Image 1 (cartoon, rainbow, N blue to C red):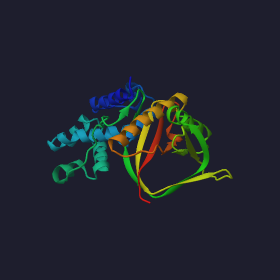
Image 2 (tube, rainbow, N blue to C red; image 1 turned 45 degrees about the horizontal axis):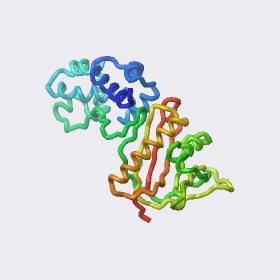
Image 3 (cartoon, one colour; image 1 turned 30 degrees about the vertical axis):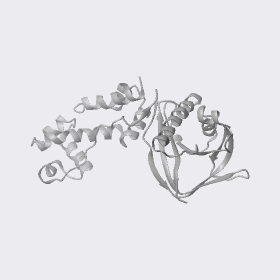
Image 4 (cartoon, helix red, strand yellow; image 1 turned 45 degrees about the vertical axis):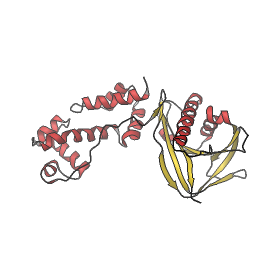
Length: 277
């Protein structure tokens, strides 16, 4: 079962059971995902916890019945709320107005819709979303400099794996630069907040960056980082080609290790698209 199927099954289950009790355990079984995976994926797709998303969808589906003039108690019970006051409180927390006042005097409100997975590039158990364009001031990264063959870095992910294994902080950050033309190696700088006698500093000019977020249902082990590197190279390479932008092969990558586990990982890549200074 692919990651897309698992996620879609979860959203479909929620839509079919909005008027019933839904627990995290039920969602976990339906999606064949651990609760940790479930929470991380919902944060990625909705920016909410699973239970907050369910509440938002219940509120959204309650609006036609509410505006049709049904009693608020009936609306609440039909949309999965156990009590009228629970519905009123959730409505006001989300929209800043009570259901009755919205029905009679309210302005338009924004509802939470079911997320679409159409704009993600998917592998068997991982996916990368669309590029987000960022503008950053000039910044520096300093730390331990290593050298890797292109295959070890861009295909096998040896650089990322070894860097994470030696990381002593929650946030792992590294940068990669190509060497001279014709050389099949790259420099890989692993950020270290504590400078040592061997520390190297790279300065990056201010400019526009393209950011790509990968998340997968696997650990950051040898096999996992290879899957990440293969999909990353494909997606980023295609994006630069489609947008007629030259990519020099340089990038930064970061991992919040608190958001990873033995069955889930997230990695963010950024690539310079335009320099300002």
